[in-house]
Image 1 (cartoon, one colour):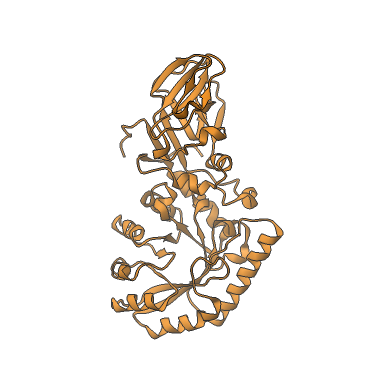
Image 2: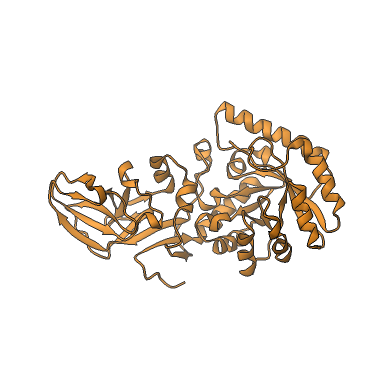
Length: 380
């Protein structure tokens, strides 16, 4: 991919993706590792991430939507692709055509799949053990498994799974709830006919719960080098963030003490200073209120505070008396080395904590306006 014309882009370190997959595979062995690449690879670029993950040993991929699976197939990826929830019945033909693995938990969706006349289409049955989002009740699992068996050889029950709600928590209540979910799930799959795959572990459980790893772990956020939650932070030291959000200074000006800046004139300068404008804003995924919660960027290896409200396409930073010029490198997420060799880093979780959200939302929120530039041979 050529360098972006725009002075704002995201470097995607595919070596970091591969590194994280290898770390996770070693952690969950002898279970397999399947990489979750939904939401365009959590904002990192699904096709590039999928190729890097499979190249590093991931045995399968997981998506949320039929179109996400089709994108991977059209890119030449022929590894197993599990769709993590039921899709509209009208999507059944495309699921069969592109040999995707659907999740099922309603009879009507089974009928739609079978009506397409597939030959041995693998399906996974999802059990709701307490997340209460989607899935069949444990008491109805045996009946649904029998429904699938009645549709052989068109459909084959190839997997049974559940999703854990608080596997990232290390408090007593979270641990107890996860224990309860896993016990409930175990009762279900031990009463059903043996299937090739039984799975329950998300990233947090892959890291912290050996009893949840089973056939394979479905690793999402950890593949991208971001902790699933504070309860497992201590288990994430070997993971490397894969996204760096970068830009260049587009304008520099001197401002007077007492003057204000940006919409609403909410920031007033307490002294004369230098302000640099950065051509990236909330339409690109930089939250509008980031300046109000202490948001910073790196220029010249130093942290510079964002001043004034982040606008749709631009934001401004206070550079004090430092010499800053148009074209200078800016790092919003990622690391930067200053002229004296000092390295500083701003991570997605730093933004997340300031904004009272999670790292997932930060990286998924980097919009399509930002070019993704896949990188290799970056020092980890």
